[in-house]
Length: 314
Image (tube, rainbow, N blue to C red):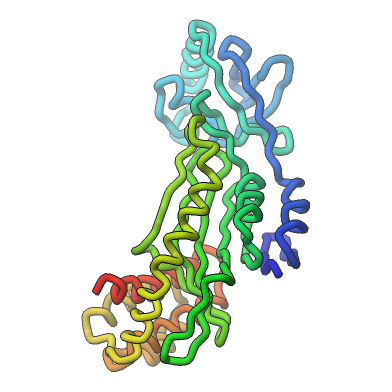
């Protein structure tokens, strides 16, 4: 079963169906010489014989490649005309290849030839290759977020919960980031999770020479998670015996105050006190996370996971 949540709210039963659906989001890649590129003051860009638009992020990437780091919103009309003239001159005087990532005909990224064009579909196929069966996926503005459950890594701490190990991935297919992998804990009792960033985190950089390492990076994370299974179990067993104390409580409250509304934060303060056990706090925070949208949910999952990470370091 694949538990997946896209902006459209679609659910998938397995990786294969999700992969077929993600085909609709597969970007197009266009490689051009700089001499085939021309910018215009109305915001359009000529790519060979085609005229299209660029996202603000792609514009900034292109400016950086030409040695100019600036946001278009900070440039007035008179400066923009001069800037575009200079950039076009740079295009004509250089014989470089640039990779343009297109989505529905719009340029979403402008990248150098050393960039490895790994897409979200590549990531999902790599997950299938290492035997992923359960996964929560969120696709938003080019970012892929996936919380993957590895059913082969399961353990039952003495507190009685059944835990499946997994790993948390986030990836931007527009050249603005890399594939980041960290541990993820999934409790079958309450169906809540936690991202544990302390151990086994790995990053896959977008270098052309490293594309063949994509699946290896994911496999390495599976291996690392398996290696730390007992360490995670021991951490959870210890957490039930230890109260939060003042220092941990203040740290949790500071983060929660930023993420939660006043009513929920008041409830948070009632449930997370210095006398609360670390395990109970972990349970409460990650269970609460399920009621939130992607960004806040993940921050709460990391907040709970950091408690586990602290006990893993002991």
